[in-house]
Image 1 (cartoon, rainbow, N blue to C red):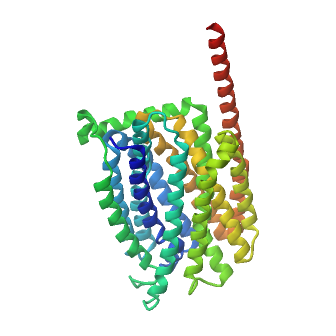
Image 2 (spheres, rainbow, N blue to C red):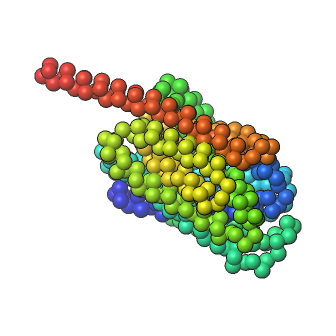
Image 3 (cartoon, rainbow, N blue to C red):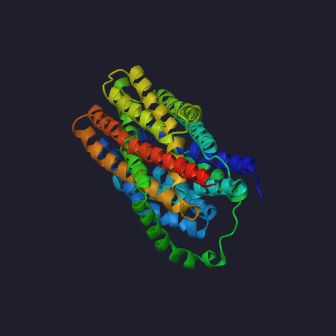
Amino acid sequence: MRSTHQIQRVYYLIISLFWLSTALPIALMVLFIQSRGLDLFQVGAAMGVYSLTIVLLEVPTGGFADAMGRKRVAIIAYCCLTMASCAFLFAFSFPAMLAAFILYGTGRALSSGALDAWFVDALQKADPQVDLQPPLARAGTFTFLSLGLGTLLGSSIPLLFNGLPTDRNALLTPLSMPIVFAIAAKISLLLLTVLLVKEEPVSTAAASWKRGLSEIPKLIRTGFVLSRSNSTLLLLLGATSVGGFVLAGLEAFWQPNFANMLGGSEGNSLFFGIIMGGNFLVGMLGNLLATPISRYLKKRFALVCVVFQGVWGIAIILLALQVYPVPAALFFWLAYLNMGVLDSPHNTLLNREIPSEQRSSMLSISSLSGYIGAMIGSVGLGYIAEHASIGTAWMISGLVMVASLALYWKVDRRESERQTQMQGSLAEALRQL
């Protein structure tokens, strides 16, 4: 059996390469899509279709991972993501871009919760008393570090190929080259997952693909029943949905917003990488801060979320008011710093409420909640951005974020009540002794 340290090393390597490959085109992706002729509403609609794909597939693929094995599903997911990157490279129209986003959404739905569930279960099997918050925080740190480095590398790549044509009908352009490098990174990710991730075979009954597929509806029903019956889970899923709504608006429109401030994107690709790379690096800092902040607040993880959910929303409201790139970048970074602090406390609360045998399904339901919010945000905020302004769309999302801290406040109240009841029961048991 592997030790917890060995499990963490494998997981951190895999997720680092996963997010590095994801980040390579991310700083310029919307600009790349616009270079192929799409407007802001079409960008939002395409991202909405991506979110809708995940909404439709998220829970079935989570059940699939529980029934068939997390490693096997992760490998299928990485194959889909590699093909999606190829589809983006060859997309020259709105329908072709939609098809690429559908394939990309399929891969993300398959990948969501698969290796995460493997990681948590493997840790708990190696050490049943393991404290999940520190390794989850470290995972978030590696995630943000990989996103930051990938973004900076991806934004530098066009500068190395500035001799390529910039015509919208050209296959290889400075803006498309990060996607080429992302394809190579995803192939490496696939090979390392095959070689390094070790998982015990699922039971003989589930090992049959046909039997495994037949198990999925039962797992989905059980997952939704658990969600409805657990009020804390419902509150956490609601907070996840709000986060998806807000993040969709940030990811879809920050590039056009800064391009407007800078007078265009030509020659400024590295600046976009610095902005987005800085986002992920401060997100990594947020994950590093999460553990000492949680300890200072006596591991009241919901209270940590209350504070930083509110500050996140305020940062977005202030971002919406900016007209110059430097202060806008500072508030943009502040939003991601708060998101980084929130990540591991939220995930710790979530995993406390989930039984091991349903972990992939429930993590997929959690991701489903986020993507429902993202779908609404992509289309709704995209319409507002196209017909009013990006600032107006961000102002609305910031106000929604501030209001949503009430969800975490209720979770904190329930956690406090539960702790009080446990202490009362322990005191009563001691008196009886």
